Amino acid sequence: MLEKKHDYLSFTFDYESFDTQLELEMNNNYLEYFKDLLKLSDEEITPASYGKGRFEYLYHLCPGIDLKLKGPINGEGYNTCQLEIKGEGCREIERRGIDWRMFLLRLKTELRAKCSRCDLALDDKEGNIIKFNEVKEKLDKHQFVTNFKNKDYEIHGSKKKGYSLQFGSRESTQMLVIYDKKKERLYKGEDCPYDYWVRYEMRFFHEKADRVIDDIINAYNGKINYPEKKEVEKGDAGFSDYTIGLLYQLLDIKEDNNYSDENQYKAETLPKWKEFLEDALKVSISKPEPRKNIWLKYENYILQTLPMYLLTKYIESKDYYQLAKENFKSLLDGIDKIIGDKAKINQLNSYLIDKKLELVDKPKLLDLKEEIIERYKQEEVPF
Image 1 (cartoon, one colour):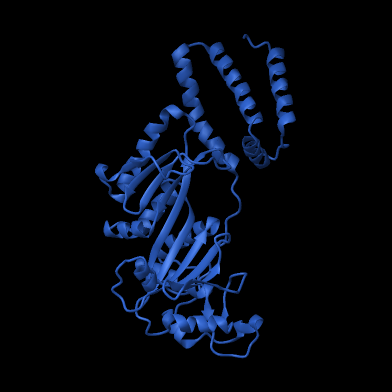
Image 2 (cartoon, one colour):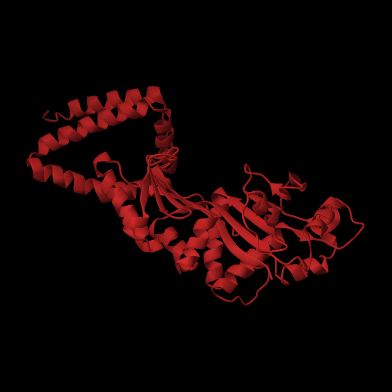
């Protein structure tokens, strides 16, 4: 029987702070959150001064799991954060007795995290139904169906390192890599207790990865997007059914036949391939949701924080006119910063698109600045 497992996950989420003085407090809040989520002790979390890449802060949470904070700015104006979970980290989650469904659900709902990469592995440690060379032979005969646009696979590796058969690429939204895991481990000097070990690894990227995670959460809840109605068990059994059905969708090996490449879908699935896949049904990844109005999210954040800021400033000074003057100056300073940054102009235009307003460029922003100054003068604001 195939072993189905999570093998790599990367999540991104917003670093919702525009105040550098609050960064360390915010970092501590994130660390407290992940201490609870991953059942960590204070001693396990270690900050790192290297390997941060485009992020300002990096924390090793536990073996195979890293948290990176305050990275590149996204299209909504927020710095981004990344939670990276390698294969070792996936096994660590299971070792700690953490429920995968709740773990993924909390990331999606509490952090509003999006998955940017999701790897799912199916391990054959017996080779008693169909072997690696038989799969390769079928691919070479073009006796298969796949939903990859490019139907040709690439072969990598060597006899010593082990070979891998690859559909798709890192530039696409999905990959399927079939490789000799035993030879890979032995070549790296690692132990391998199995006589045979071939891995079927599915990798999903960007929005497709996020949709796969949504589907996985549903599968844990006993809901799978099958082409026909079928009762699904909850928990790990649901995850198993979804994962193996996804592999079937990516690669359907056919019986020997004389059909052309374009007509392979007419051939029957190879019986031993169906047996290998435990008589699973093909699974389709859920379709993407319509683009969300990012202005609404940004507006909601501002409406939550701006009143507290203004009220604090008023309590501090009890001077309405001074408060108005400071905000007027902040607006003009903000326009100057946007004018000098093409990325910020693009970001502003994304909001204007959502509001169905005319887009701006540098000359238009300069005109707007002069217009705002003139309007304040006309209104005889007392400063």
